[in-house]
Amino acid sequence: MFKKDKSQEEEESYGSINLIGAGTSITGDVVSKGDIRIDGTVKGNVNSSAKVVIGTSGTVEGSIVCANADVSGALHGDIKVSELLFLKTTSRLHGDIYTNKMVVESGAVFTGKCNMGAQTKLHINSEEYGKTNGRKAESAVA
Image 1 (cartoon, rainbow, N blue to C red):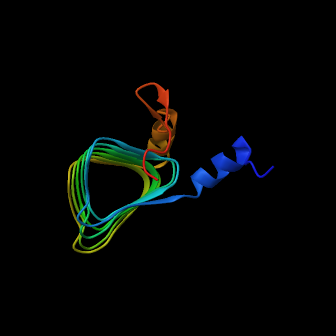
Image 2: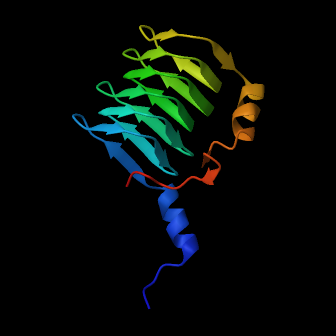
């Protein structure tokens, strides 16, 4: 009687917000259709079809693939953003950047190559960033 159909469940999962709090450490890949905020530590790849936020106390040791990203903490790995990457004053990024658009605040630090523009966006989208190891991605963090 009150069952949700599949389309309602899929729609809700896109709007979900996932939080990895300060003091929390995750080893392994994180995959989600919704937004992800990382204030703890992730040792593995992060994949989201929405927005990824790394807070000032957040650290990611692995690659990130997402639609939008705000980085205030540390990233040790490549980042692929199909829309907008925002590097805040306290951000420390060690890896290559692939993005359509980027904002870098004064004080932000990144070491690596930067590839930017519409061609990069097409390349990221063509890689089907919603897939992992040939399987359809599903929300791994709730």
